[in-house]
Amino acid sequence: PIIAGNWKMNNTKAQTYALLNDLVPLVADAEAEVVICVPYTSIWAAGEAIKGTNIHLGAENVHWAEKGAFTGEISADMLLEQGVEYVIIGHSERRQYFGETDETVNKRVLTALAKGLKPIICVGETLEEREGGKVEEVLVRQTTEALKGVDKDQLDKIVIAYEPVWAIGTGKTATAQDANDTIAIIRNTIAKLYCPKCAEEKVRIQYGGSLNPKKAKELMSMPQIDGGLIGGASLKAEDQVQRLKSCKIKIKALRKGRFFICNSKLIIIKEDDLKNHLTDTASVYII
Ligand code: 13P
Image (cartoon, rainbow, N blue to C red; front, top):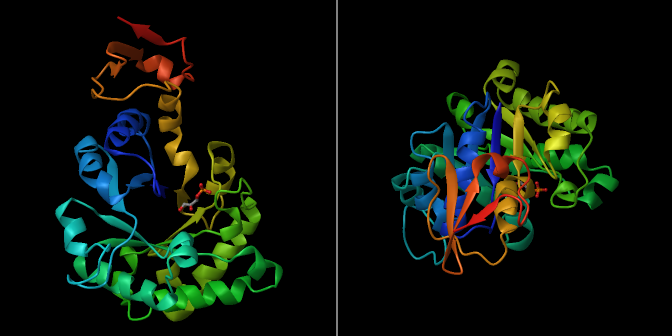
């Protein structure tokens, strides 16, 4: 299985260090492959913070061109140079707000693969499409278009994230059965495009959309679901740190505890307390 965090447009460099200092020990024994997909400005810091750990580094998009006049875009080489391994492509927020289409998704996928990046391709229907009975039509189209020109032997580099748009950031998680059955449609599409064995064994398909620790166990136990793509809940460790409201994180964590400078005071938080729901006062020692 593969569990990936999509940080979206969250976390400064300082927050990146803080969150990863929490996350690294928490996932050290994870059986799943753990990936964090971070904003471009956090890639370098994230790469440093996870060096030598079991966490893999991902980005949130990649352009199809090698280089050139594409203001605001980023190339595969730029990501690879920073140690990026995975890249999210075609997230519904890109499709909704930034004009991403099936065609541009496909171009990004082909370039990512050609360069050695592993694409996490997002597909999923809107509420309107679901209510209009178009789930299958949408997923077959998005999957087929995204994979156009992808060779069979590249399939094991591909992750697909089924993210129903109505479930993203809404707290309305799909039921385990529904997510499972819908992912079966995607797998069946891949089976028809390539071969049943390819669909079964090569492509990992995640569920994403208001996936939180409470819902994760049931969803992840479903036979069709190979992992999760997590937005809001992937920032949870950060939420805990945020409770130290006015603090600016200036010093990185040491092994046994966390150290911050806040209003010119050194604050130490015990790691145990961090794990057990940090409160504003209970676990903070001011020297
Ligand atoms: P949420 O987990 O916040 O619903 O976001 C899901 C998502 O969009 C991951 O890519």
